[in-house]
Length: 367
Ligand SMILES: Cc1ncc(COP(=O)(O)O)c(C=O)c1O
Image (tube, rainbow, N blue to C red):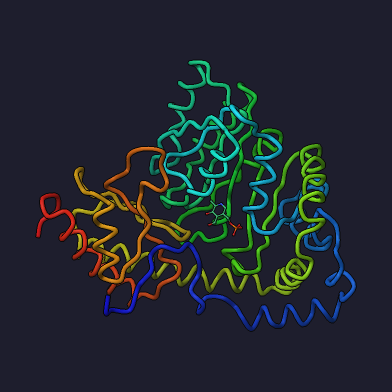
């Protein structure tokens, strides 16, 4: 493996698109303007001024918001509160591997429903419900889905909400990528369309930086109150230092500038990725993303992603196997994250990847 490794595996930003100077300045202000609040234990609901800012952005009462250590923690609190062993949960197929693991660890009865380029197959959800499935929760990543990069259409958002109301289940709208749209029109949040049946999570990992570990949940007040107790018993409070820095970063306008920087880079990277894949690996099928970090690549049937992964690794390229995001199937698929690589790395990485695919699947793609 002589070549410099290129990782398409990590859903994280490259350092050049993180506003490190802006973060340093925000930290300075956090310690200067509110030293007491920044260094204290704080409360389980998070740093109060940041909670207020988030509530204002969503136009909701702060009592409906809890700020957590990353949205992963928000997810864990929500699952611990709503999902017990044997409870039915609908997920997208494919979906975020950590969600699958979290649900499995809690003993949930997971039903995966096909994800289409315009979002989960709502007709299939409807059939399952008509056949007697009674889910507690449907986990949906509506924008620039992880791992597929697809976005749920407005029509499907509305149909899903109607089903949640008819069959009385909660939609968990897991939305860390919403701010990263670089093409097309934004779609309404399901939370805004029906606050009664939706619990919403988002994160500053993709807009500020992942190391800050700040995410949040918006939901019915009664649910947030239950999660508050769980949060207190888990960690007393989340990191006030991080949240105070994020609060300064958001309120100073640095957040908007950071989002603009990230989106511009992602748009160029996604375009380079699509063009290079089309040229180097014409057998690859994909939908060009309109935002976010990820592209889902499908090869002809018969391609073996384990062999492709190994050949790619030999050539210094990392991908994530599609099979990691599914309970079964997906052997001819993989995920490419273009968030952490420059355009020239993308070109070089895709060339090596195409070579790896030809070496691993000579009968499936043309040499
Ligand atoms: C769909 C989804 N949900 C949640 C998370 C966790 O994000 P955080 O860094 O806020 O914990 C991620 C991170 O990649 C994600 O893709």
